[in-house]
Image (cartoon, rainbow, N blue to C red; front, top):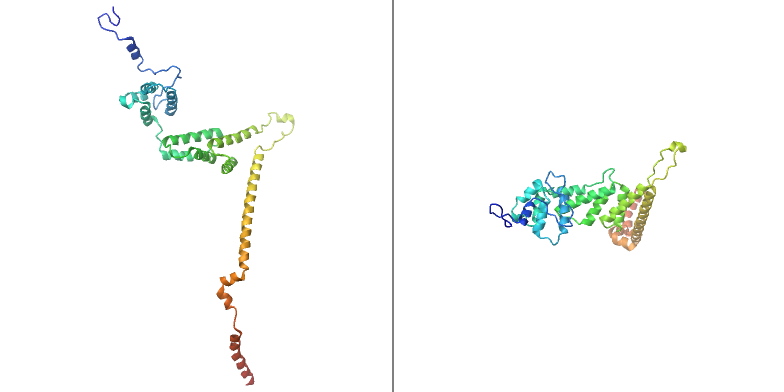
Length: 306
């Protein structure tokens, strides 16, 4: 029997075609690539954003692959409803990874309105008991969601830094970071985050833990000073010094203004120019005054003689 012929005289499919037929429905595998979990759709235990990030990372490590191979890799990483949604598309609608991702974004992506995402980001505050690291990560995730929907809405550095600073629960830490921002000591979100983590770490390392057997030692254990007291005193001293400098500047400016106003009030030429009618009205002619009083004196003399 010749190769490729069956008992009935037909031809068997070539080995390569049989292997390709068996590969239908299987995820494409490239040597050296890690395994990627499959995304099944809305009911999948894996979120669409996480799956998309993993797949895009894998595609970035395949620069030599064609668009057809990359598209097959994406389809192979899908399962269930999500796979059926992509397979049913026309060939030209799923010929590139960008087209497939665009279609999947419309189905399973973040469709939250931009105004709502903006409100969620600017309302982000540190929760009671939440660490600085967890709060910074949550704030960063909200900002990234907003940037993904509207890339040109904000500048990443200052807006994220300011919102992180305003959202901190600790009032003194928030005030200290604002002071450092005004002095250009903290310019980026990462710098503000590292400073807040550093302060939080110092506080946690200085927390006093009472011994379990305090009664055996007799009396109450010696209480250490508040770990925040030194930091509070330093901040208070610095703020007071800044206020003193500002008060001195205000006093100097007020003193100069008073001196200039008093010098103007003592100038008689300035008074004459300022009140010309009042100054001239106060001087009276003596002849007019004598002429007004003379008839009264004559009338009084006639009354006595009569």
